[in-house]
Length: 450
Image (cartoon, rainbow, N blue to C red):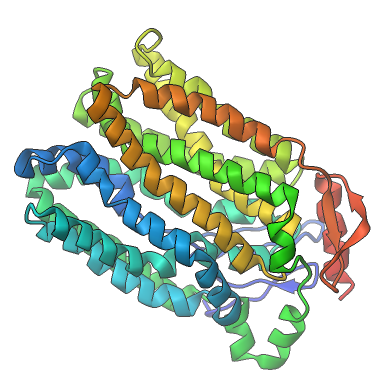
């Protein structure tokens, strides 16, 4: 197929976008509904780290906190540089960041196999990985999707971000097999090359977002990209709904990523074998795919605040089910499905709500701040989880904190208020529409009027 296939939602042209690439075309014309997706994932370092903890600890004598400490480096790097990366996406588009990012990330992933027992070298490998992955952060993909879709933006984000959940599904059992068959060093090499090469080829041939189309056809691009409505960056910093979304994103990523990275050790502590734990982690990833698609469909039709509150709160049940007084084989399986489903929807809830309450004028830079919250929570959470285990000899305090944090996250995004109706000048109109399907239609009317 052609590099960029044009279709319409309202008046907005669509093109190939994804994480690292997804192609999705849809039209809201009566009787014509179709969608296609090509997705993949290269976030193997965090998804596989739990399976590397045992062999790394056995060979080098490292504690789990030491092994997890490397995750703080990409987290802090992303937290500091995400707004700048978002501004770069706003200016240059996704393709120019994603292609070199894919190559560097594949190399960085394989380089972990050269670890020699030095903590300085281990942290240096994570520093290289941190800078390599800057071109692959979520802002690269969500900016392209959110600026293209209006009426089905939630579902489009779900399809695009499903690559991460697919990675969570297949990486744990694959990593376990690679380590068992080839050893942990070669496993890192296979993970880097095995994901990096296909992802790069798919992105090279199919990843063209709206800004890439603007460069290829300046007249068409100018008409579609000019005067996008939304908040100025300084206005966003004072927006109460956006502040609440940011705090919720930080908390949910802290607790969720801590459990995600340590899920295999958590399950083995509960009496599950290592192989069964890897398959349960895979089951959680499959539930994450469903969570992304269902959450996307729901946010397009109902209040995203209510949908988000329910999705972010329900992991509290799962975390409590993994504790000693309650856990059983059936509850462990149910808990992993719940954790996976919620993990699938939490990031796109943040992206969707940010787009609705901030608009698209400076979405890359504003969502870059949200990505900073993702990075801080995602980096500090696993390290804190490792420290908790080293201190108490159990993950129970982490699970209790995760349950309380999940409830707090749900309350933060509940009742954010009606969506603003954006004018092309950038400021919202005095009138607002309810946060549901009618609000989406209102935005579509603005798009159709241009």
